[in-house]
Image (tube, rainbow, N blue to C red):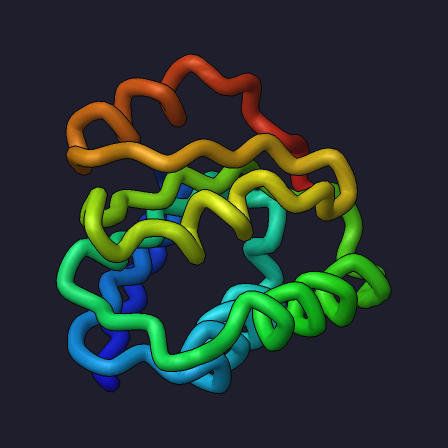
Length: 125
């Protein structure tokens, strides 16, 4: 699995692009990179159009629980860009309550960017 992560500090935006077989560890590593760079409050676009999830819904729920229990301060909104045929995990993750962060799933990066531009910014802690 390959993930490319780009931080746009002036825009307070993180973009993660996943391709190929996606293990839960890949998603966890992405989340840790965001935390370790102190940008949890940034808006995020997670593009999984070309990713094939290789984990179960139960494993995803366990990861969500760990994220809920990890104190990080306010979390920025998340826009998933997903393939309609393989986007179930994105919809499940977007619907999970994680410290009040808004999340939605989109079919195009353009719609994701538009939505994120309308969501209020989260101040740095």
